[in-house]
Image (cartoon, rainbow, N blue to C red; front, side):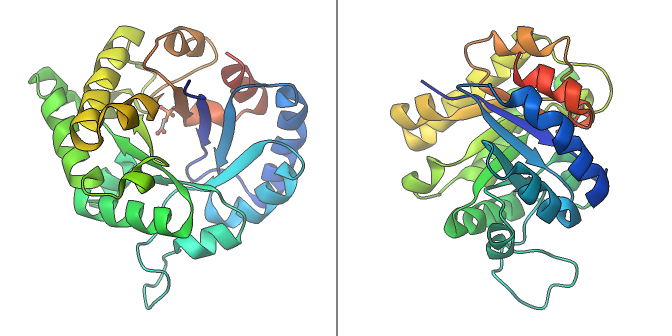
Length: 249
Ligand code: PGA
């Protein structure tokens, strides 16, 4: 049985004070949630407030990116041991906004993933096609390239801690969600890739999240699909009540 992961990606939103008031509202709404892992990924500067606010709950905190070196002269970067030290247990890697605006490559995704695993963080590795790629019928080819480039050659015991998020770029922040069927097809393609690279047992254990305009009113239909093992939520995770509805969908 794969335990679903319900993750929120706050992107570049909220201050430390807003983080604290969010958790005050959010905590009671998920206090009795069972059988789901809840993860919130705030901006780096809000991590301490989030970690403190989540103490004594099952909510875990993650970073939104991570550098592959443990330390060094990399102005503006944050390392995996630093995230861990701050109380993070997870980290998002290769988000399409990083790929699109910051020229993230599959090679960097692999290096970040290795560094996260090495430090003991659970990586949420994002993959997904653009609208043009989907319309050209290249979705599976893109997923293959991203999987091969970003997730190939990890140690099997490392891969066991990886979570993949399928996030079609055309669905992110657009209000245009993939239908549960479209998402399920892509998730099955990703599971097949996992099977080819890491074997049947690893593929069956792999949690694959869907992300892209997940909202309180479409989360249940997505979660009903057998290959959708959770969600990665951007915009709708910023509202405590709305995200709690999604977590409990
Ligand atoms: P969205 O973002 O839910 O706002 O579409 C999802 C994501 O980017 O992870």
